[in-house]
Length: 317
Image 1 (cartoon, helix red, strand yellow):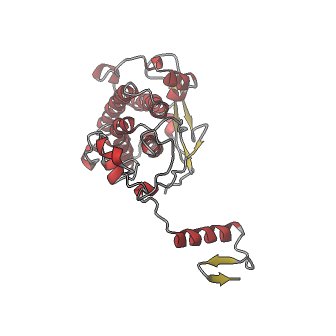
Image 2: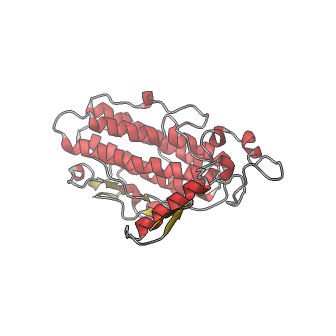
Image 3: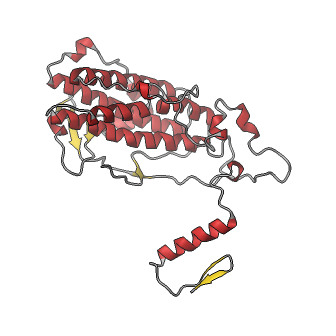
């Protein structure tokens, strides 16, 4: 079973809408090495896990559960970059426009018009070229060492790609989210490298993690200074054996220590997307809105009888 908290694992930083940045970030969501792949790959490996090497299963599953939060974060970020874009300053456009203009005229010039035609200015399960996400990306070999090696390659490749995306835009909304994911990808690299090390695999000779100084990115350095790249979370209510793997010196031999926690130290409010009349979203007509408002009022009153609620001429005492 899974439980959900209506909070984000990292804050969404406000900035101007930027549809081009949103489309680049789609690669980090629905690309071959994006967050949807890491989420599904690690979860499938944990669900299909064989044998009693429970600490390794807990490690893989803990990272997989965190990836659900990453999919949520990156989806919200893409939607924020698209909402009202470009430079609408969050204003709502009428649909249809009273002056005869086209409220979504700019959409046809964007890199991915599907963001406006299909997604109503929100994220899609596709890569930056618009290709749909595919379950064929998921590797679940059924061999623990091979799975861990594959996962290490996946996290290393994802980290490189996100560093490239970071350098494609100075937009603060994009950079804050991508910086967080770069740091967490490093933590996951450490998790899978440490697991291989525990199994006696000299992963450093077989697969050296590409070395580059991600602290050159200011947003990344702030998170590294907080130690987020050496933490991993179990997200378990019934206990986990992850700490048997994710503890002690970092496998990168940099003098840092690995720490297992039940959950991240902080969480952040999830922004509510505004209505977009020009996209006919969510499209509540006055009657439905009145019904929704009346239901909200009824809930907030504790369901007490005696309040006057008028719904389109039908009065209930």
